[in-house]
Image 1 (cartoon, rainbow, N blue to C red):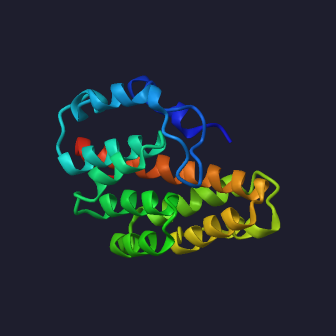
Image 2: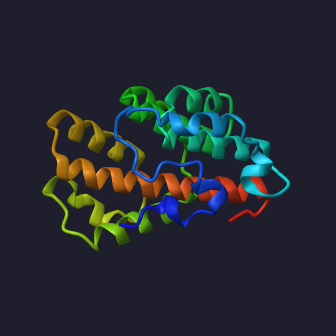
Length: 191
């Protein structure tokens, strides 16, 4: 799978680690910390911001990608939108705190992005040989956050490297879809 981060504009890719994030907390990529601290949403998105909440969601996602869970949490917990709850849920999934992640995904509700994300995951899964534990991804036409939380927990407990690698790829697809959606909302380009 090509790294979805590399498909983003240079202003954004320059602020993101090229490696896929861990399923767990991982290690913060401190080389990006100072740059992210100085980044304004307007500079990041290269345009006037229509939704400051959606722009903050983009920043929460970038902190999260780079392993700064607490910084991402500080932003996402104060964004009272489905997208803010989604970033908050991903952060707790990575902590790992599956119960708290599930709570925040319930707050997301039935998001219109779930269908698009399910299609992207299924398309990706059908291009690879999947371990038995994640065969369900080849039939994923609609994103089910709770199922993904459970899959990540199972992979972490059983230390199956092949399964973890696939799930990290899927988490990156999720990250990219949500980031792209938040960018559009921040710019006033409603999908």
